[in-house]
Image 1 (cartoon, rainbow, N blue to C red):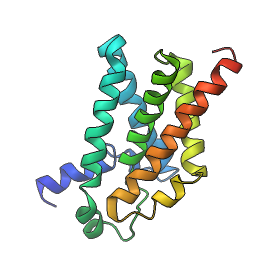
Image 2 (spheres, one colour; image 1 turned 180 degrees about the vertical axis):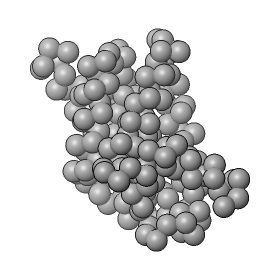
Image 3 (cartoon, helix red, strand yellow; image 1 turned 90 degrees about the vertical axis):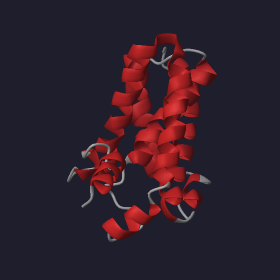
Image 4 (cartoon, rainbow, N blue to C red; image 1 turned 120 degrees about the horizontal axis):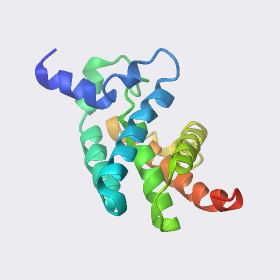
Length: 163
């Protein structure tokens, strides 16, 4: 494997988190949590803009991996490809922060993790239909819609729970 392919592999597997033998999507989402919390710790009140910037850059990079995925994995949406979960988590906390006009605390990040996983597995329409898009775009797009749903759900549910 070339150096460039190794970098691509590290990117789409979230530094190997997607290689987990158990629930790679859930484990891979932890990459998004790490990035989200790290950005928030470093950027403070400016975290929201950095989350969106990171989400856009990683989304574009992920969508550019169609050829690599085709020649490296036996199926179109391999479980090891978890960059979509990373970006989906960033979308979740970005949507929540934008609607709630506040950054999530530790409980909020925990809620975001679980809300994103629920919506990523459930994939209510049109998220499920987005999986039909060609190549890596289809891998990436459905998780971003799931992230938007999860952020919206957090905005409505967390206040009911006293957060």
